[in-house]
Length: 170
Image 1 (tube, helix red, strand yellow):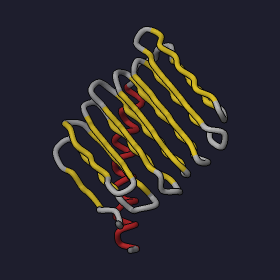
Image 2: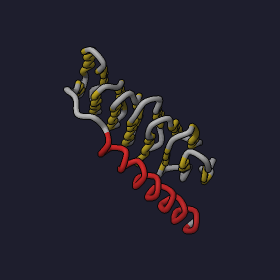
Image 3: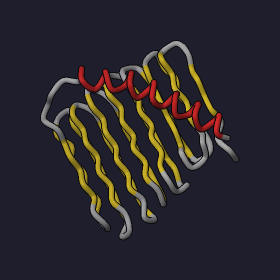
Image 4: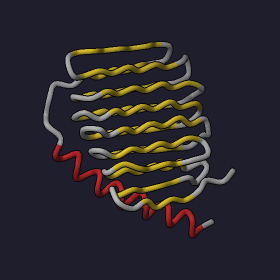
């Protein structure tokens, strides 16, 4: 188990470093910010920016869009963050945990949907696609992508050519 955890940490660190370099290349634009405090649903569509955040009475969600689409939906004491920048689509749906979904660049898609407690992250750079659920992490595309569900151990990283994956426990 320690080997799998270390491998997942290395995969995530490498992916985060590559994706982080993409963040600095994103153009600056006016952003749409949707914050959902408990029992609220917030939606903004403004030109190229669109965001929506929804939270039940025990949760909080936020979505940030700068030239992209971002969605966050949280329930059951969950916390969700969705970020879509420069053509990216980031969506987080969480129940009883914390999930962050970040998509930066054209044709990047990051989608997460988890009900396991703890923490999950899914991120993609230009032309990368990433998905994380309770029992799987999938990374693909011609760009960078990373996904990790801490509760189940499912993780992956993709550099545009190669994919590294750690299966989650069932």
